[in-house]
Length: 369
Image (cartoon, rainbow, N blue to C red; front, side, top):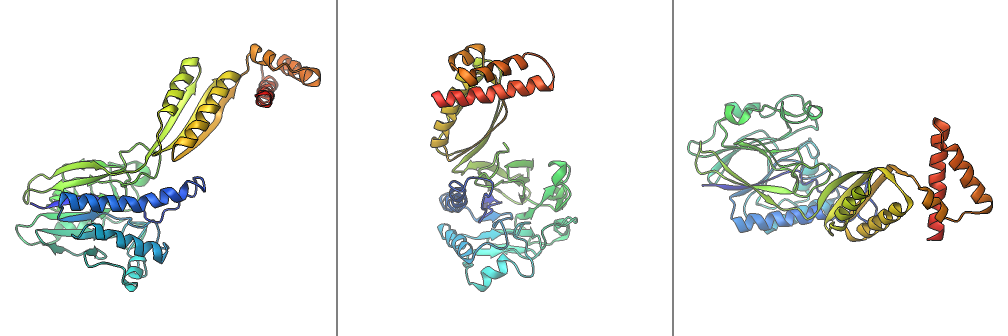
């Protein structure tokens, strides 16, 4: 009974250019340590092979050092690693794969599936559909239906692309895969990559997702799949296994009443060192509430791996008590009084006056804090 570890979308070499210069390198490094954890898991579970369904590398241009380092990490599991080119690392005539071969970086137990041809391993057969260009509008798994494999061996397919009619429409155009491919090709299991979350298409067809999350979408990323095939034709048993180091999450909150802020502060206080957070806030705050929020965000930033905050839709609305507590006198007092008077009405000019008053009140509060 063969057992596999199915993974995909390692994106080794990803730079995270949109994150801070301090945190981005640490998240790049986490993708290497994810491979170390996968190798340890494969060895511990005594799998018969690790199926890596595309996008091992984030780009064809990763450095030679990155390339050598990745292949060196495969030493943690002595069995076969089956590596499929995806859209980021397609098997071009000149590619990251040909460079790895020239550098003699590929260990003997790493099998590069660079061509659409059947491979026989000890106890199973593999049908790969490697991408030979970044995007194709043909279903490269079509040849699976006609492929011959030795009788008595489970048939395992590997592909990288979008299952038609299942995933979001905006990613269904390139690298299509028929939703019934496993049944049509008599596959015992179809290991897919490209969708970065763990997703079951049917009993025999799964996306493993990336082992280390790399975006804020909540799609069950950060896992690998343990797959047991009892015999040819038997339904595989698939078990997701958490392997991620970091937890990426998006926190959206609309602050309208004090209890909204209390709930948000509780969520921020619960964040841990492994969290990567995208905070998006809207609503209204008075000056004391703003001060509490600023403290909570600052504390969370010092505790988590990365936090980015979008407060563009959060409006500061100082109360009369807030303005009185600022004790603005002289020229500033006159400006505050004028803005309050202009902001009492309606229309665009009144909204502008209210915004200006909020900004001035915030500046004065910060000055006296």
